[in-house]
Length: 114
Image (cartoon, rainbow, N blue to C red; front, side, top):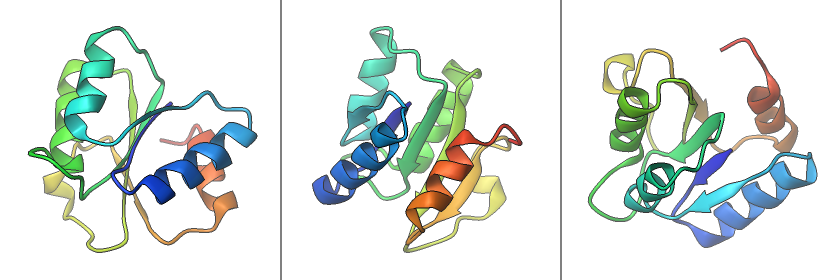
């Protein structure tokens, strides 16, 4: 799994939560950093990204790039500030609202329904 979040406290919390559930988690703080990891061969089965990221690319930009370049990666987009309309993110991506119960995030990530 590749987790992308620019808030270090939220990134650490989510990485620890998912790691404690037995998932291997790579972390990035920006979309550019995440894309660099993918381009160097990181092969996650799922990308979890916040919409609002520091830097020039948003989480929505990242999701669209990953959908085009790595179509095998499942996409989970999260935000506590805004809910984008479906046309703003890849059709196969799933949107998840913050705040969320820790068990809910794990259940969504572990689900094979999307």
